[in-house]
Amino acid sequence: MNSMSSAPGAAATLLQGKKVLVTGIANDQSIAYGCARAFKAMGAELAITYLNDKALPHVEPLARQLDAALLLPLDVTQAGSLEAVFNAIGARWGVLHAALHSIAFAPKVDLQGRLTDCSADGFAKAMDVSCHSFIRMAHLAEPLMREGGTLFTMSFYGAHKVVEHYNVMGPVKAALESSVRYLAHELGPQGIRVHAISPGPIRTRAASGLAEFDALIADATARAPAHMLAGIDDVGYATAMLAADHARLLTGSTLYVDGGYHVMS
Image 1 (cartoon, rainbow, N blue to C red):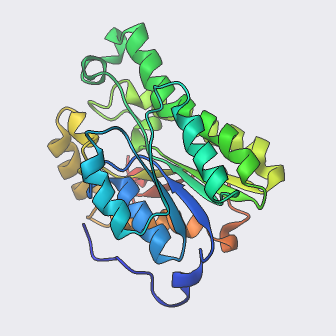
Image 2: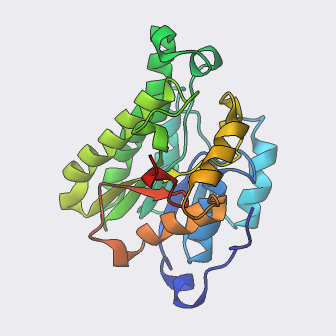
């Protein structure tokens, strides 16, 4: 983790009074945690989710540290779970200004195998958890974003170019980024912006499921123009800035936070 734990100067109030939902925190190395830190540092009030009872001991101290107003269970594979989160937000706040979707999954055998060999069930599961749950989130967030708002999801360079060992997640993230554009089009008239955030490789628990991940980190670091990769706080502040009113005319984009890695062939 890098040291950008507080927003300097005027940035500390850019999200003052904003209500923000953050999903997908697994531990203090999660990209979603970096985003939550940035939202909080810029003045937002947070609702945070955790996957299950096993995850709660890892997430609860972080939510307490961030003074989260709500800490809620969320398993998007369980019927009614996402709806319960938004019902709780509606009851507590009655409004929502931003929501971060940092949720992805593929069965290990399909993730680590060739796309050519991916099972129908594995592909459907990866698409439902990693892509369609974001669409469902947008559907539930829309009535709470009466004052406008911003929806974020996490993508990766493998959505556009072949990245060795990314396998089934490449097509899934491509579908996710396309969904971002269509949601931006549909929700724009309500003042709701939609973005995909595309960090470079970061050592998170989710990334540990990718084969040869150390090699990917080394290659990306060597080839990125900055010769360094983003940490979770770098991603967090880039994301949080897009939730500010100053960014109200930015929507439908994929923002790369990867030291320029995506521009290299």
